[in-house]
Length: 213
Image (cartoon, rainbow, N blue to C red; front, side, top):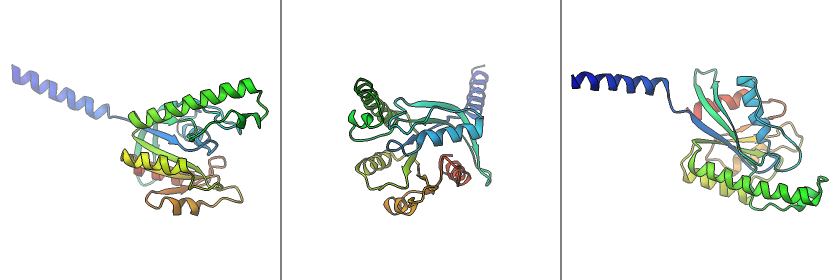
């Protein structure tokens, strides 16, 4: 009788493990205005028809991590993954309310936005430390990739041994130089895309399905 009970429990556990596989939580990280939410919206829209949040030219439009669950991405090579996408606030070493004044915000609003952005960065780092299984690290390919925040973030990701795909975004712009990002981080796969125009997005999906499975 005990054997039968154990056998039933074993079959039940195997059934649960097979049909309830642990999903990976993939965080989209990077400095402000790199295009993280634009990419998150494209991924979610392409595979679910939905969206994840608004975008803006003002830095730190995303000030709280936003999560979209159960996104299944398939590659043409047969790889398939089911993930939760976590769109995180832009990570930076300093947030000054004065930068928001340049976009026409009143001082009180700018101060509130800076405080919320600072709290959002802390939240993003908490996710990275405790609850993220893989990272898409987003960089603007028109900007210098050797910024302190990028070196720091890649170091943290590597210390956690998280799989990472680096995205060189905004290749549709005339001064884009994705090769600088490849030179800066040769140890990781780099996929040049335009999140806005969709250039090379299928290449990114292939790399995601390969890296995060």
